[in-house]
Image (cartoon, rainbow, N blue to C red; front, side, top):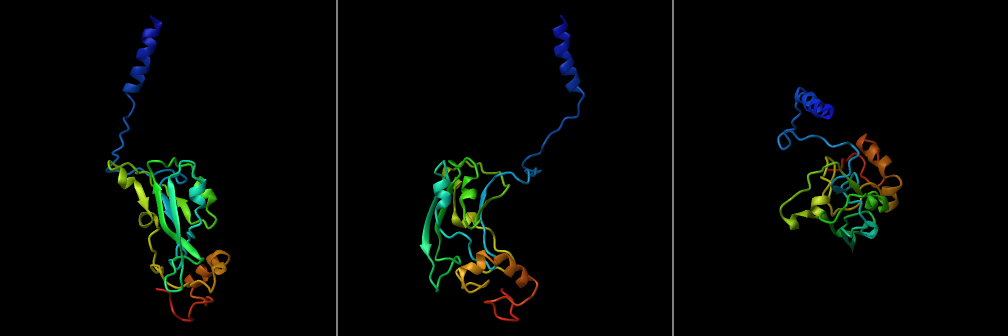
Amino acid sequence: MFEFFKGFGVTFSTMFKKVVTEEYPEDFPPAAPRYHGRHQLNRHPDGLEKCVGCELCAWACPADAIYVEGGDNTEEARYSPGERYGAIYQINYLRCIGCGLCIEACPTRSLTMTNFYELADDNRQDLIYTKEQLLAPLLPGMEQPPHPMRLGTDEQDYYVQGPVLARRSAAGEDVPGEPVGEQVP
């Protein structure tokens, strides 16, 4: 008999609490800042891609969700500061388990995970993200590749001194490999 009232006690205690309803599609709740969501291929401050097509992320992926095919840069068509770039880059979100091992394997920090979590779709083909969908947007001051290197004369300037040169360029100081007095579009 006592269990009967004990069960109703739980019911009565929740009856008078304020109801919390999330209006999900209209009111988009933010994810935790460190949530592992959709991947993003990052760019250097001049717009060149950080991905060098090394395929280490694909080798590290336990679910075999990443496909990378590298291409060779030329002086006429330069997409990254190195000798190679990721010509084809795909992530299959039907397979991805969000473990982050691909992020750990990336030597150039080109692949990161955003906190965007809406990855559901009713079409299986739409869940295979291509390089164009994964690339970070061009920010002001960046130029759409292919173009020559702007942050220095060789790839070491990008990976060793790249952040320093980007800050100097933003502050209006002279940057090696960049014409004096001109701004990068």
